[in-house]
Image 1 (cartoon, rainbow, N blue to C red):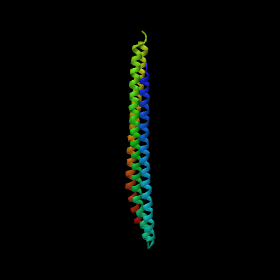
Image 2: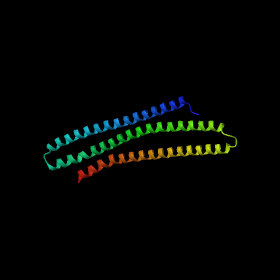
Image 3: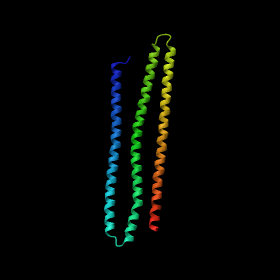
Image 4: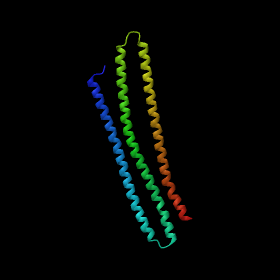
Length: 183
């Protein structure tokens, strides 16, 4: 049977975990806001420089060359922004996932302790029911662990694919710009 002190400690722990995860989420949002502000500032400065450069153009060939020269840095900056944004989101979700996994593990351990305690006080003849309940609980824990591993694998695959796309974008764009200049 749970005591008032145990319930109070559990509630306090749950509140600490909730506020800890909230702080992690807000830190991630704060990093995203900082990234977006830096990207907006950089874009504004780049646009201003482009306007100044276009105003100084003397002939159409120079204008075309200037326009083509914009694409490669733009693609690289876009890829860098996407990677940075993904890193922030991935890091934040990873931190929160670790906390959740830890809490799930602790809850499962506490529940198993409760089941063991209850089984010691169970009436005679209920051993088969208790054993079946423990077996079902173990199976559900194994299923949860398998699901966590699958989610982790999918996340790792998505990260690898995102990296491949970003690398391709930064490689292909300069080649396309060079072809356009040559044409």
